[in-house]
Figure: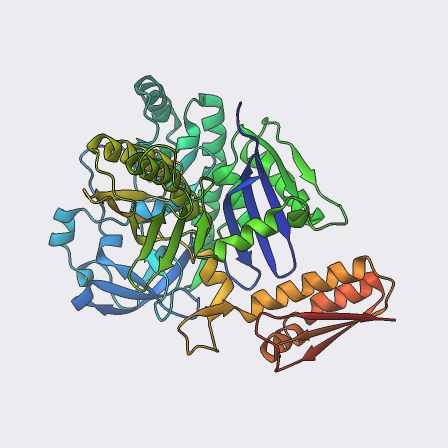
Length: 507
């Protein structure tokens, strides 16, 4: 029986959350704050402000406040040995930043760009810490089934489409779809099995965006944004919606109408069950998602067998340890370890997607003595990782069952979005950020007033959270007051823990 795949979208004034489930089990989770600009994927007309030959990079003013950096490898045109492509969704730009060794050795950054030069760049990585955004001149526009490459005339097919007959058929269609010698096309994984009609519609959709971007660039003065990446809900629909998706549920009427129009332009003719949720109970609470999301911040993840995995982020990598815990098995130690390792491999792949963990990941599986078991475990892990839209690469798997892999990091992880350095332990740990706690306080206020006849509500919170509520989030509180004909008082209490919220209601 096929899994029931659903997409749930919850929109507040402060943030948008998207959850993808299979049989009610959370498989992917995304969050975007209203205060966060949609950088990754956006295209800017920037100006080169400085060139640093020592690191082979240029700094570019894109108008984002902090100059982005452009490596020489992100400018040099890569010449592949064949036209096969590996572009996937939001990772398209990242894939194209890998240098071609020969051209990289021949080129110097000062030969490719000049100080003061205006240049079109695309953000491939958000600013992180003291670093500005990472940029590339290899511009790409992802659609439902296709990726349009603005400065690359190659045609290609995702390597994840493995059927030789389908690849041959798609290659024939590709030759008919080229609309410009300046732009190339790549068929994404979602394009497998699609006909010329569907692919043509996608190309038309992308060509309109491409032409609009060119026109805006021609008349804009640097620095300026010439293409704004879609909002979170649209991106997830574009990249993750399949015909196997049972329904899409959204709890915001404006977002519902936006998504309906977006779907009609993205995949015209395809029937999509798009539901507007208007229930009293919050959508994520009703669907049992809040509890599953909360577990994403736990270091220990319990396995169904009784085993567990422990996820420990460090400065340089993420370490994951697999334990049998309470599971003892029914046969012998080898079979017990093998069973737990297989279950852990599936869960690790799921947690990487859910937490959006990127960079180097080291997994310490339970030792297996039988070579056949080790080979089978590698296959299970590779198959599980293949479900990930982000680029993953299993580098090694040792005889002592230690796996090393890399995963593409495109955005900040869910944890870094939701948490900040802990003020109680000198930065050695983390607590939820003031923004996160303010959002939670607003949700608790909504919930308390919805089912109460009382007209006054007191929110007792940590002083930093109170400042956030009384300043940036005051409009949201005022809206609730207007809707419920009540009064919300925000009270600062230094004795409260940063993550503590107290709600008092009275007549």
